[in-house]
Image (cartoon, rainbow, N blue to C red; front, top):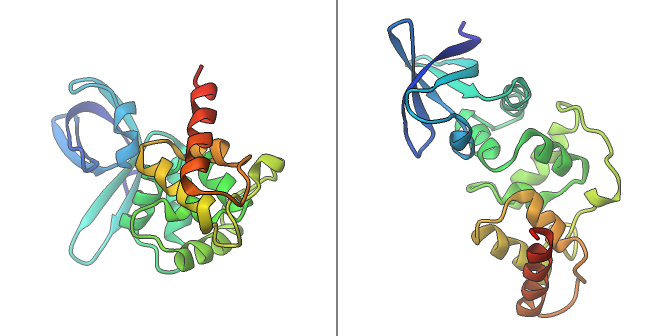
Length: 201
């Protein structure tokens, strides 16, 4: 069982696979694609916390920049119907702290920002993860945004639009939390973009 790797970063793929050479042996490791920028340049030394996943037909290594990220990955694997690919996709969108905030707030929309996860799956995951992740109540800023339990309506559309524009989960949460539930999507989107512009000053 491989628990960690320290070695030279030989190659990395935009899809999230890296090649780490340790004592002359190259290990292919799957990492969250959203964390590739944290690994450094080719040739640099990297350290990854590793989860070794054994299947009948393969042994696959999954690497993470922090122990907390690996713990979240393993918690996700423990939920019904979530395999390594889905767990990795979730951690490509959400950091461990962002994922915990979503769970604490029952924020269905936050998980539906992950490609391939619909509202029903997101709601089930939130329920299961409450018992698997250490989630603390971090205050009123965790309130779910959107009109109704599924976050549909104009605010939900604004949230999806901001995600499509490349804004991060936490940025989207901040931008939409003060929006009214009513109003046109276009006007609410303009207000959210102004909020983001001010936040970045």
